[in-house]
Amino acid sequence: MAEETSHDWPKFSEFDGKKLLKELLESTYVGTLATSGRNGIWTATVFFAFDESFNIYFVSHRSTRHITNIVSNNRVAFSAFMPPEKSNGVHIGMQLEGEAMPVKPGDRQKAYIDRERRLNADVTWIPDKDGAAKMEAMGAMFFMIKPSALYYVNSSLFDSQKKLIKLD
Image 1 (cartoon, rainbow, N blue to C red):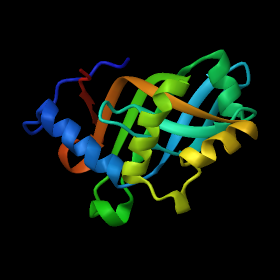
Image 2 (cartoon, rainbow, N blue to C red):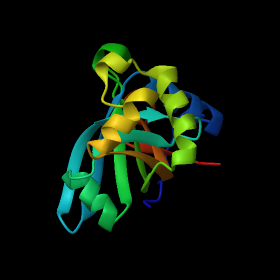
Image 3 (tube, one colour):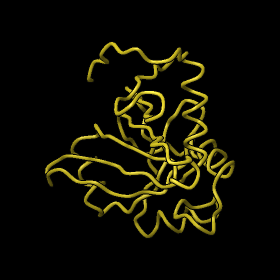
């Protein structure tokens, strides 16, 4: 994990950081997943949902390059950015490092509730409860990324730097 350097940034509490991260994540449902494994380094665009602990949820087919990478090395990076029309020209985003793992069957209900809280099923590949069994039968897997480091990017607050947000 990269160390944060000292800057003369405005006062910025962890509460503020988490509030701004949630605002950012609510503004979009598309992110970029980066993996590395036996198949080399790879990025994939994924539709995502998140929960209050900033766990990221996504669905992908088990044969995709990013999933085969995760099977051999579950350390991943993920980023999402606020669409320009919602950010008034400010570069606002988040980046995280973490571990990707299949969502356990007993935890899927919570993941679906989090998904239903914010996503419109008409514009995403994340299935609803009824569609999950069909997708799994076709080879889809429901994953969660548990962050180990989370960064907030805001060009109006931090110039081109990013701010480490401490996780509980």
